[in-house]
Image (cartoon, rainbow over all chains, first blue to last red; front, side, top):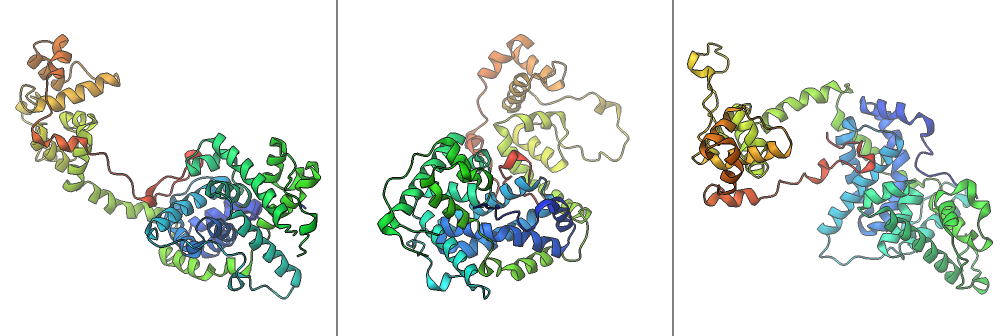
Length: 193
Length: 238
């Protein structure tokens, strides 16, 4: 099954022009960046800070809007910046909520299920996405985060290492263990997608 | 979704580095995977499936934030102009004082202070704190009398010694110190010769009980000001 990185699927080759337009004040260009980045951002945050994913995502965009004009870099840099910002916001948010117990991510709770268009297979695909996110959330925190950053955010190993403040070796090991554990969970639960 | 639990097993095929790389990268290399890893490949594919409507629900709010921030679409120069008041306020006496406290342990500020190149409030602060030359009152009047053309510099036998030694050590460490500067000459005179400066400075104490200032770490940036790690290039500085 071929898969496209979810991030970048909306904009593709025109990234540079879209970024420049957004930096010049084009709301439409900014919306394009947002539509491109937000789904991946939310998936990452729903695994790492399930109790506050939406809040952290909008907080992240507030910071991105503030820093947008000064941003320099290509699409990889942009993704790295977006997720770096999100990670910091998530850490702040977790600190703020540290006195409260953290609820684990429910496996595709009914109210979180995507309100899909009419096509049934689209709904099933979304269900699969949420189910796998729930499985990833069962991994040790670092493994879950690394898998989301590598697979969903489309960041390379070294970028993930810088972003998480770990060594590239540690990130590689976390990815390996995470995938292996995920494969075991899939085998145990017998989930087929 | 079918639950095929009777076919499942706890045994997962070994995963080599190549398999891991292929799984993480998705797409092209997946045919090379061991058959037992196909469920995992499918699961990862589901993670990157197209956006759902709830994932796109916040667009209007984000757009409003953007429009609010940007106001009338204007090019980059607008934000440049807006920086000036910020810079001005950064150079206020309070900021200068904070910078001086941070720089006391670094020496760079002291170097600047003794060459008199700091902005007036900072220079004045340096003058009061560790004996750097006073800020020139009227740099704009332009008529320098003969007396001001020979700089006197701070007195290295007094409380200025600490700052001078700091500046000297800093300059020495960076290979930038000048043996001809007024500050160095004063320091050498106080030490009883240029070759004695190191020994003289070794004996100089941090001035007074205010030494606790120097131990303060520099203030860390607020979270929003952090430069992202990605290749060190993108900047979140507004």
